Amino acid sequence: MADTATPGRAGLPPRPIFPEGSSGIRTVPLGDAALLEEIRGVVSFFLPHPTETYLGMEADAYRALVLAAQEELNRRDTARRLARDRREAICEVLDSDRPLIQTNLYLRGTRPSVEGLQENIGWHRESFYGPDMDQSINFWCPVANVTADNAMRYIPDSHLIPDAEIETSSEPDESVERFSAGHKIGLLYAPKEIVSGVDLSSPKPFVVLPGEVAIFAGHLIHGAATNRSDRIRFSVDFRLIAEESLTTAKQHFASGKSYFEPL
Ligand SMILES: [Fe+2]
Image 1 (cartoon, rainbow, N blue to C red):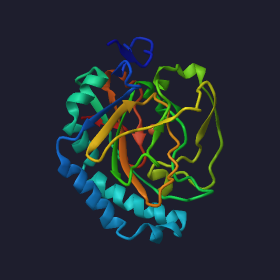
Image 2: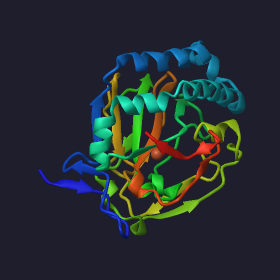
Image 3: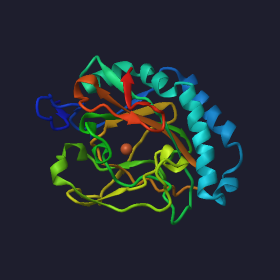
Image 4: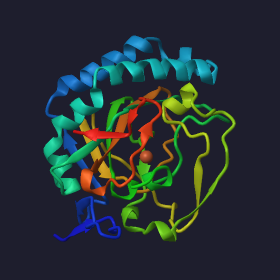
């Protein structure tokens, strides 16, 4: 079968590379299942109570709890340990033996039935929010309560749509202050909305079972994962990119380090 790749940039070969029919997603089992247990342990250490306890909490108080768990996961170098576990698949997809990894892992803790507040990220691709991200990949690992009802969704083969064809608009979100706990856990103070260029009418859920991870094109339109279940959905994610694709040095404010480091 032919491969498909995100359109190339001037002077760079097209990458990442996915087999045709894969929709820009590769699902692989983790080699070391103990990693997932450790992440679950950190989450339940900082958020030990039943979901109801967290439903009535103020946004800032809840986000501070998620941030505390995220900081502990970062202290344990969780992103690097997850990525090294699947290094071979990452190098294959990036078509590079010099993968770089985002220095900050995000813990997503999406509560059900939260209205009027940003609790999840809407439809986007990574190049909406950062330079060079057209050639990035996402590493996404479900942690708890990720089901067909509430899994992250994607638009099949949307990684093949050039940036220039997609029109967006941006509105500040009053509930997420810049540099706040909400911003540090990956919520957006100025989310972009897709206005045209992508048919959003037929999304599909990521089918990633406990113990598996998804490696997918940063250019794939994904998100919009409203939690329709009755429990908090937890997952972790971070981005990787081939060293050859990175042209912009950038600091990550949540980690205080370079945005990317060698894996
Ligand atoms: Fe994303």
